[in-house]
Image (tube, rainbow, N blue to C red; front, side, top):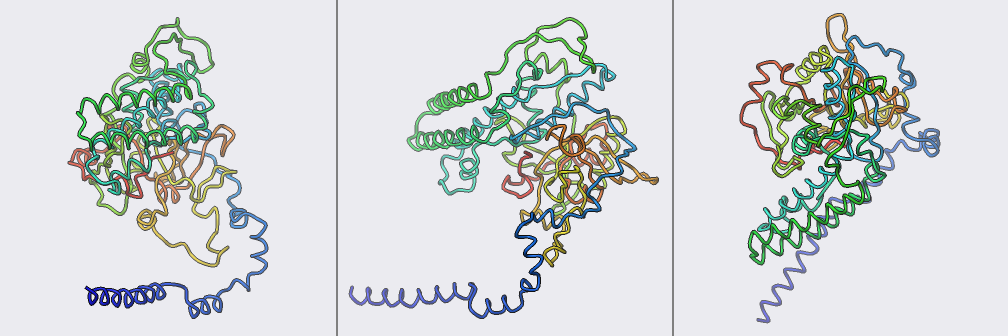
Length: 468
């Protein structure tokens, strides 16, 4: 026994220094630090260092040749509509989706009628459904340990504001739509962070309780009943913060000048949805994605990327940017706006509402380069879809090639170009990711690719974050 203890002690004594030595080889040692300081050019850039100490990096890197947008002409442009403001919320996906739906409504009525949909109304059900998705996901994975990647997926981000056009389609078909004036925005709807934090905390608490019930082998009926009680608490929290959803209302449509057209009618939200949208949204579109890491003309499905437990996972066709641009131009030519999403924070001049690859020269400012391509940026989490906007115009050259694009944004009418953002085609190719296209503008070969069995991919992938 004593011999075993002595041998164990000797083994530990030999192992600890080896581990420490291995760590030291990966650290910044004296020789490495000497090399760094001797080869640093910081002392040669004292004036630049002083400038950066009292100015923003963007102000110093800004390319002042791009500080004004002089060319605002677009050869193809859809009719203008009201610019909205999502304020301090992550609901850009809903704003862009509603932009498309209300533009389609106006187009069907020869632009004589207008409608504005309530974001607050559908956001209520979005949050309730996401709460259920989390709780049911916890139940489904209750046999896995807490450090399992799928269990952590639900507990790490139990609820969020973000989403895609697919979520708007599922939610609107299930719960309907109501006019904005019937259920206007609340303070919390426009400033969602505190509510989201409280809902997340409550859902994590509930999730642990449900795991305990499964571990205790409680009947499925008892677990479902308890989940229903939990969702009642979430419903109450949402009702206090957002207002309880309207069940019935009276409404009269108005023209583009604000004049009432026809007599008021009484609607339920689903009746109003059918009146304004006309029929199911699902099945009428494809989601195109540009992901140069994966094979093109293949269909992919993102597991658990949906807004409702019984809804549709996000399914997309991976396409080169040339095909995406071709479909976008075809849609815009027919005065049809498109849901689209981008890594909008890259090279955005907020003052001018202009996106170009050379808006900011960070490379010259720091004396280095930033050479990663689109695939490398995605793979390393350096870039990905972050914000949805509504593609509404394109400018083509004499050969019919895109030169620049314009989108309706949801940051208010006083942002950018009176609520719009203009982007060069080079920037579009580098930082555009998603495009929702009505099937009538999709070539047959792409429709065939969209009908193939999808390859399942995981929601942890760097490209599959929700638009917010």
